[in-house]
Length: 407
Image (cartoon, rainbow, N blue to C red; front, side, top):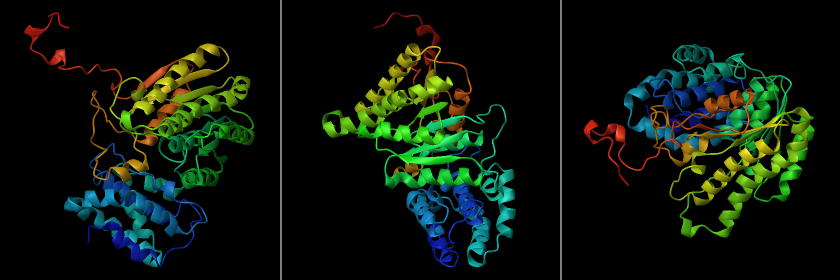
């Protein structure tokens, strides 16, 4: 079989390009299965990073529209893994054959059997999509039934997964996307949540222009009918040398990252006080430690951590305010920009995965929202922000060299 996966699937799709009417469509489940099998190395990575391809699909669109978005985002990453891994390609053959049969004649029976088999090996998202259980909570340990949640930057990555996680746990959700270009990921969440019988809507707002923020926030909260949880996730990352950073770069990041967090919180404050609600801000290890080329981004994230402490003190006994620092969380764009990177095997200093999944981190955000704490800047970064890396680790030196005074 030709290792160019999408070249194999492209001609088959032509005969089965009906509009998408449900996310239980086996065409999505099969494509998700192939994607997860590749990025999990056919299940050999038990805790693997993959792409939730539902981000690229909309109800009532032609299936080919979402397929092409999927293809343009992950084709190079898929081909990179297949071209040098013939055993993996061989293990994919049965499910690709079953998917081909589905696309050729609409027969999904063999594909369903294959999805059940890989589900037992830990690749269960495809079967959940097919069975309509994708938005069922993994546990009932905490619920947000009846609560109203607003998540900014929810068109992809952490924000999108967080919107899905709160919906799983019963919340009514308002999503945010910056411009029309990024609307598909947000509205795909609306489609998924609506299909499950819950409520969600998405609203635009380009936070690079601060004048847009209050209008966005007011519309979203009006839809929700109040507010219990605000997750300030929207932001822009820029890696650029300090000496080359322009005033336009500076203002774009300051406005979108810090201005968005500040003024969405300000507009939401009366509603949160009324509900005794909470704000969760997304900060970053960049706000505590340094990395060359991230001067403006680091400045915004450090400011968000400080703002969190300030608001928690200023509104003690009225609302809760915390921030959370994720380690590297892989959105779909990471697979597009770094197609050769294996995010499933990178490790942090404490031996855990360096690259977390949006789904896992979204669960951490929801868990934080369930706790009665405030004023905390919590690191979920595998000790990245805790370690002072200024040279040799003393614990790794010979014992006889311990105890010396040094400068």
